[in-house]
Amino acid sequence: MFLLKTMASGHAAQHGFCWGLVAQTDVAVQHVQNAVNAAAIGALPEMRMHLEHVVNILEGATGPRFGDHDGNGSAENPGDGFGTVVYAEQIAELLKSRAGIDQVMTQFKKQVIAIEDKCLAILQIQDMAAAPAQLGELKALADQLKSGPMADLYQAAQEAVSFEVKSVE
View (cartoon, rainbow, N blue to C red):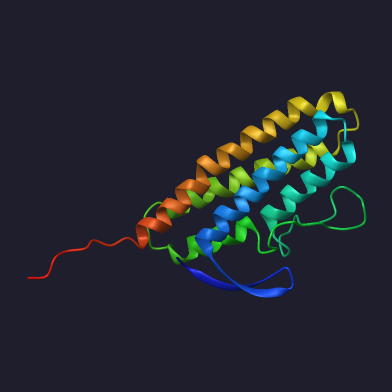
């Protein structure tokens, strides 16, 4: 696994790029579900907070869309701060000579932008009656990211480091 030393929760930690990609995608998808659950009980502030979390987890602390999207005065990120997109970019950079990696990254970035756009659009909703349909679309986009471009990028990284064991005579 590709390693990177990064700051996480105020202390140094070792993370593999592949592990970080999968783990942070999972955290973002969980916060999509948290937003769905909050909307289901009519908790608009909590729904908005989780939507902010999704954008900030995907972007990472240095991402252009990282910020205080729910208007509470604080840009919150329950992820590791590095960002799902940055993990993906690091993997793609290491695999840049591999055929098809550019297409995988293009699809990954398109899917992330679609998720972030949907989150930002839902954050503008003032009527909770409109939220469930929009959140359903967001959940589908998040599931597609995990099973599509994220899985493809992870698979490419795994194939790049695979090897065959042969007996020595």
